[in-house]
Length: 115
Length: 115
Image (cartoon, rainbow over all chains, first blue to last red; front, side, top):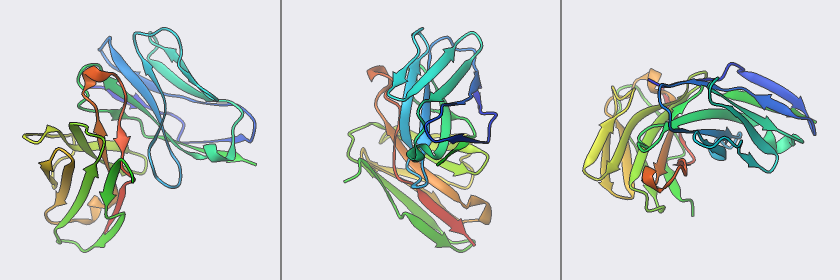
């Protein structure tokens, strides 16, 4: 079975600063996908960024980037120039390739951006 | 209109009552899912469906049932609600996995309280 661990239940960051959210996972699969989802107080689940395991290059989306370490099974999210609108719960998720039948979610990290 | 619509948005019900949560989508996706979110536990899969005739149990299906009325509609029922089913429920859809790792499209969630 796959497990996803987010070891930081809560984090805070000053506005305009950089913060890194940690995620580790456990799998015997070689091909898979990793995702970060954001859940603001509106509770909508919003895809932030995704990474294919076969790609060595780390994914980036504007102020969001990941540090994907396949051997270490680590997938951290870096938010640069933090904004008040980044305040949300962040979930790391894992999906095996060519199944699509289930995401495995971490327990989430609650991020607060302080003005 | 939202791509994935969940109704109701919030619901309070009494122990022992039957309740149905509804989900409809305009994405044209074949795959639909029901998850529940609990604080500190992340999102856990209840049921998923790959098409109208294909229904599968997830990791926490006890006490729940589902109906896939059409490609676009997937309902979750609690036959006899109990207080520990109080949670935030999400419906999600996805493409065929062979189309690429597009991730899920989530509804806006139904907050269910069982008293």
